[in-house]
Image (tube, rainbow, N blue to C red; front, top):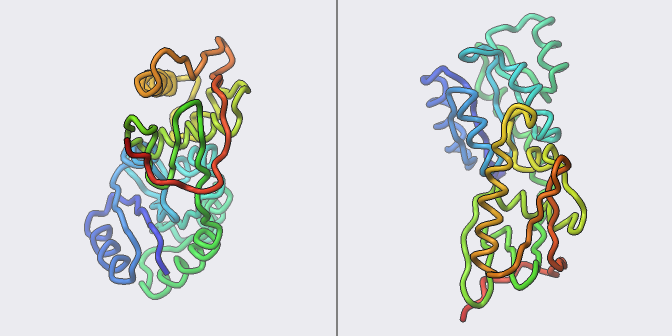
Amino acid sequence: MAGSIWILDDDVELGSLLLEQFSQRGWQARHLSHPRELEQALTDTQPDLLVLDELLPEQRGTDVLMRLRRGHPHLPVLMLSALGAPRDRVAGLEAGANDYLGKPFLFRELQLRVEQLLKPALASVSAPQSWQLGELQLDPQLQWLGNSGGGQELSRGDIALLQLLCSRAGEVVSRQDLVQASGSLVDVEQSRSIDVRLSRLRRLLEELQPNCTMIETVRGRGYRLVVPVQPLSQSAPPLEG
């Protein structure tokens, strides 16, 4: 069973061991040591499963999880913790964990729990929607935006923003919805990072289709895609001139 698994745990030795074991079973594994690394990684993509430690640097795993759930309510999360008392397990599950396993543990048990959590995540995977926006084509699978004159590879975070704007073309999309789509854990009221990303994305669109404003800022409300948009029946390779 293929799948991508991220491990957020400041125990380097355990992280290395899990990377090795998961990779041997065909899973794409990635080890993160600090919550800031998770926040940064989520701006580009998200895993099929997160293995989350409870005792992390500067904060608890349950705090990370509660913030994570705002933007990723369906991401499977398995908590690992040296705190294995019933009240600790309950706290983890109440915070939004799908499963909770105390340390020390048998890897075979962890493997079985991971397999169960990955099943629905992988079964629900489908080809992402491609879009025609103005004269440009957006291909999420290839992470590509452009036309016959050329194009640009985009990060998964920017792809997610454009997909949301395309799906609600002509409507005002709130900054909070855009933050959640990008996968950021940053509080929208405390940061202007989403505005910076939208400004950069708007400049890119104008470079690819000059003399055309595609993303409109609606002051105090959010952003709106203002070019003709239609879904494409299937993902197509980038057009060659």
